[in-house]
Amino acid sequence: MTRILMVCLGNICRSPLAHGIMQSKLPEDHFYVDSAGTAAYHVGNKPDRRSIAVAKKHGLDISTQTARQFTVADFDTFDYIYAMDSSNYEDIIRLARNNSDIEKVMLFLEANTFIQNKNMPDPYYGEKDGFEYVYNLVHETCDILIKTIND
Ligand code: 4NP
Image (cartoon, rainbow, N blue to C red; front, side, top):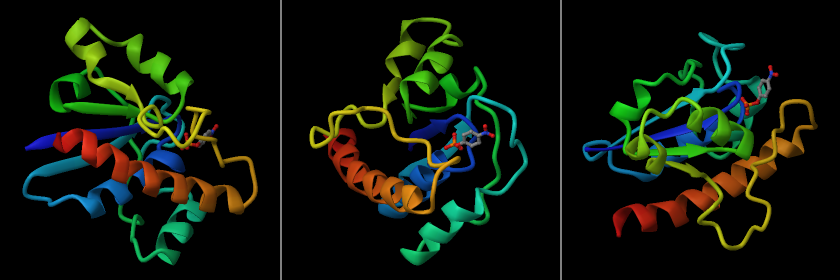
C-alpha cells in the first residue's frame, strides 16, 4: 500500500480537492490518500462549500471529508507528503525529526514543469473562479505525479 498525504493551511480548500482528485485516479486497494492542514482553524469541518461545488461540477464528491491538522505521526504513516505552497512546506519541515521525514515532503507543483510558480494559489479569500483554477491545476498535476509515483 502506498500512502499519499495532501497538505495545505486549513484543509478546507486546496488539499481536500487534491485528496479527492488523487483518490479518484488511483486504485483504492493499492493507494491510501488523505489530506491535512498545517493549522487547526477548521479541524472537524467539511471542505469549503466552494471546493465541494467545483468538485461536484466535475463529478467528484468531496463532501464527506473532515478537516484535521497535520501531526508528526503523519511522517510515519505516509510515503509521499505534498505541500500546496512553500509556507505549508516550511511548516511541515519544521516538524520533521530526521532526513527520512524531510525526504517525504515535496511541493505538490514541483513536478509540474508546465507551471513556473510552485505555490498553489489559495482561493479562500478570492472569487469562485479561483476554485475552478485550483481544480484544473490539481487535476493536471495529479496525472504528472502518478507517473513519478509509479516509476
Ligand atoms: P486552504 O485555504 O489552506 O486551501 O484550506 C484556507 C482556508 C482557511 C484559511 C486560510 C486558507 N483561514 O485563514 O481560515
